[in-house]
Length: 80
Image (cartoon, rainbow, N blue to C red; front, side):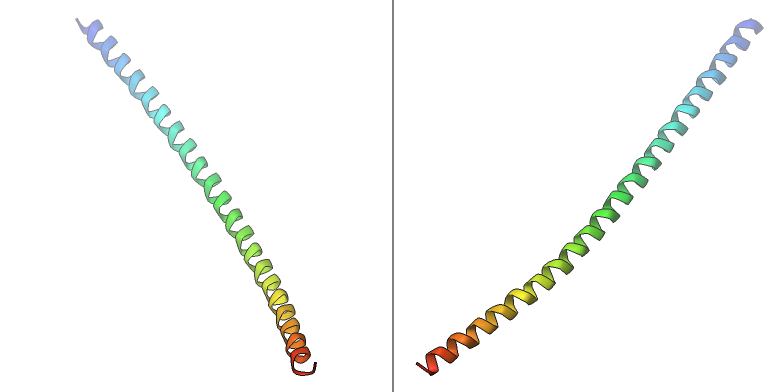
């Protein structure tokens, strides 16, 4: 009877240890996934900021040219 109880206790300890190691492994994998996703989001954020800056500079140039053309057209309309 003692042998059966010892076998059951040994098996229970083995299963608990395997469960704990599996849970620990999943936790590490989840942590690594969160880190990778955080880095990806940070990289995308930087690229969007760069794109926004480029678009703002481009818009300044376009509106400057449009204003220049509008002034030229106005001058031609006033002095035929």
